[in-house]
Image 1 (tube, helix red, strand yellow):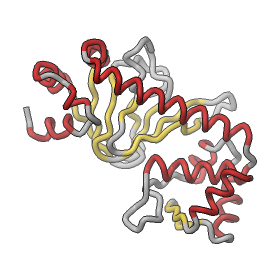
Image 2 (image 1 turned 45 degrees about the vertical axis):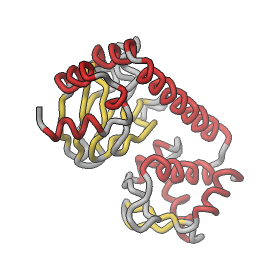
Image 3 (image 1 turned 90 degrees about the vertical axis):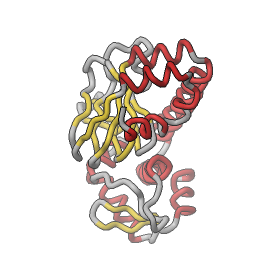
Image 4 (image 1 turned 30 degrees about the vertical axis):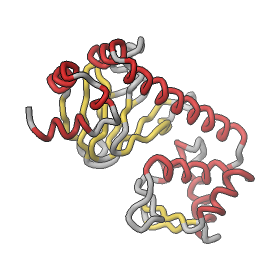
Length: 230
């Protein structure tokens, strides 16, 4: 058992510290560590759901094929986050495609092991319930925003979503995520031409700065106002 594997297991939320010594040994025995290159697919929508995943280093996006036959980003999993966590509980296939957006180190645990931990450990079960509740709340807010807001409001909401999920780089202003214009457009359910025009308008207004796939938020208060009012 390598020290690196134990370090990764300990970093997975509070799960490790809720386990008994026997559960920790079982968890380490079955946990696998994998390395993915940027743009590499971790699993496809419709694949048999066999594992729950944790981002130790890097970042993962989850995409789903929409009714418009386009891939839409439904969530982001930066370092320190679990994804595909619903799969141990009755879901036989993954409901999205997971793709590394940068070189990433991913831990995965078989779903039967996760199910056993949740079933046998009330503290882990409560942690899962809280995580599911927060995820559902976030999903409902995103659906409401997509239905109610116009293009500028959708784009502002998308940039704030990336800020909340991925945080800032060391300068405290530049998003710690570098999606393409197409990825942002698909996530915000708008045409790429509208996405480009809206981002350019925000830049001209001094709300953000653009440098390739780097997005710097210069006026977060105004961006929040646009998200809420437009």
